[in-house]
Image (cartoon, rainbow over the protein chains, first blue to last red):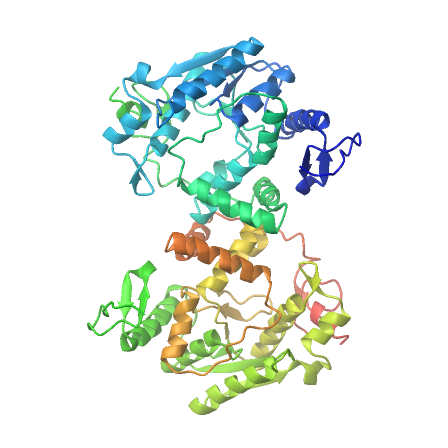
Length: 312
Length: 312
């Protein structure tokens, strides 16, 4: 991509990271990427090699990269794939499941695969249509999808005794979420957004080891490692607010390189200093308690939103 | 501009405000604008008719509109014009002073006009060049200009016994400032940004009665009232971060009408609920104390930045 040289060996650089003033060849990039992940794991007290980790795997570049790195670092990490039943021209969910399964089989790793339709009788889009869930005024399955994934990830992690739930959110994801939370001043969400969310009240500890990588960096890792992954975006993501914010922030980043990392790191620092107060969440019905049906933590008055949605 | 009708009288509308779902003819717009200002004055406990007000007047559309509205509402408001000595192709400062003086003369209002060069021996650009003050890496007088204006506004208000200092910051200004403070997580500035900043430790109370008006609304008021004002922007504003943020936010607003007001109002609400903690300001040298030279409040170890800059 450039005629720059690797800062470590003078080979031709494969990637240049302006915000780090660093250019690296393929070999040293793959090494650097793994080291940086290990550094984030320590920096944010995510987990040790004595804790069993469940990686949420979608079949996309970020989650397969995360599983690959944890495997190379010899962390005891198994995968969880959730087939959401999303189709468009391509069988999006079945395709992505195939990538996740192939990745696990090649490395002899354990993948837990669950299928929402087989377990609960409906795909996510079917359930979203029936319950008329909307996002930004349109009937979109995105909020239903998020709710189901959170429920299932936590359920499986607890049922199978994993101490840690790892997701592959990258810096672009985190910054878009943060930007959205700030634009709406969702102070309860601001207070909760963190690379490591401690286990509490029936929730497994959640960690995001890639939270400081730009999306292009996780993409470069997956490509340079030669990991096959599903390249399509979820067909329902088109036109989402989050993609809109990502584009916008990418424009600021182009104008002022380093903005993304400064915005995210500055937020974490302000939080660490105690700049935000955790306030009671008005959107909550009440305190957290186990759902009388499934036992997962919920704030709903009756059964949890998940059980309600699937009429369980 | 549109073929819409005024919501109050069925005349042809002169302005449409999407965020308020409101369209008004000239007459009803001018009425509405004054009512809304009065409402903001009460909502944010800015001042009463018993308090003397000093309006910072630049000769631009916002500050002349503010002085005009306060005059029509019969608040005891005098003006303060600060000639900064800014020239480019046009004599920007002298031109803007002429607009301020004409406005005051026509209404028989009292204008205090001060001239930085006459009082302190140098124009703002001269002082900025000599002291090598920079903004965003370039030698720009903007930070020097802000510092001088804050110093002089507060000095004049205190010397002449005004209880209130009113500036004409509109919603676009406030949102751009807020956006910048958020992108850099300037938590001390977030804690201080407010429509009404209480008097404290040598500072006069500062208020922003236009903080909920879009820039196009203050512009429409000034135009429809037929008030002559300086149309040029300050020549040094070109390429500033604040203008960049304004453009960006305008793009979001176009996409999602109401974003600006929601962002600002949401921030004020979160603050009111106590979502932000005021933290000790690491950028400060120490506690506020009177400058040994001019008596204005400062946090500098010796004389204040203003006195230092002009070698006073």
